[in-house]
Image 1 (tube, rainbow, N blue to C red):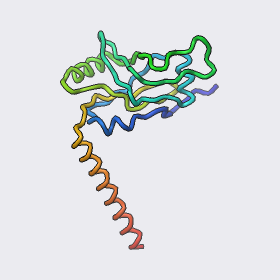
Image 2 (image 1 turned 90 degrees about the vertical axis):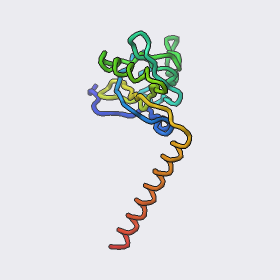
Image 3 (image 1 turned 180 degrees about the horizontal axis):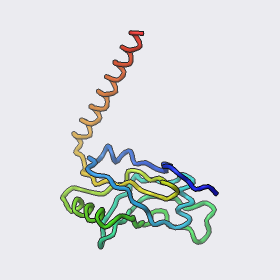
Image 4 (image 1 turned 180 degrees about the vertical axis):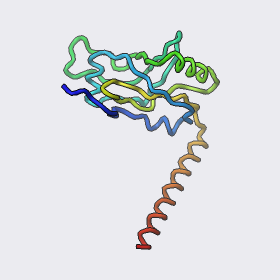
Length: 158
């Protein structure tokens, strides 16, 4: 069997970028069981309610939903169990420093395979207020309208 190369996206948390101000991102490996990997290879996962936590010098990922493998037997995994994230000590220390600040949290942004290994992109984030969310949405709409106007002007010039 040929070795996988590149990045294959499994799941993405688009709502996190809307609800949080992303301060810093990290890439972490995951400690998974065999049936979890098989379920991920089928492209089944959800990061919606997921969050990270630092406990005793280790990083843990909670509430990430990886459904049970359909062909699995009694060895199947629990869908929302906590999973250990693999990070370097310096990265954990950096995460701990930012995590200890008031109002900061660790959220998963994407779950993917990189060269055949399951990885999760996590971010240290700060929750946005409602008016910040509206402002971001307004800026996005303004950008979209200006892009449309520019492309329409270019079409008329031809």
